[in-house]
Length: 133
Image (tube, rainbow, N blue to C red; front, top):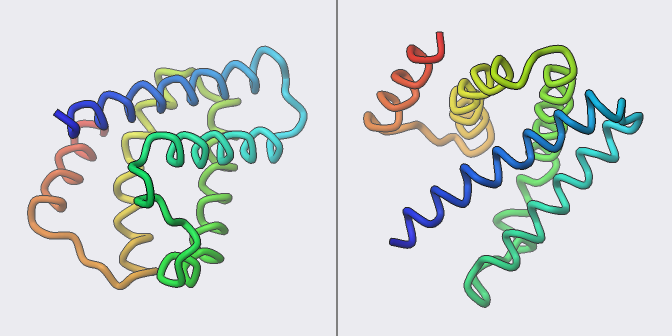
């Protein structure tokens, strides 16, 4: 049951953040994309802290902090490019393109942690990518 709730929460949050960001970028012509991205990051941290079990969310451990600079830079670039894509495409087109995010995530995980996806992960990303194209 917890997995289903987590998956539903992820989908709802992703849809809400994408829709609100698209609205702010298009309708308001929001001038500060960096500020908007920072607000999204704060919202993510707040949601993780509020939804995790007490003591389970520990973002300041050495194991996490050693990867923080590279992950922060790649996340910022990814979010900035996403913001530009949202301004220049419709929401349905953006959501189709966003489905390719697992490809980027696997590459980033491999480069940063030296992790390699298992067969199930590879097939899952391949099927998502084929369905997107």
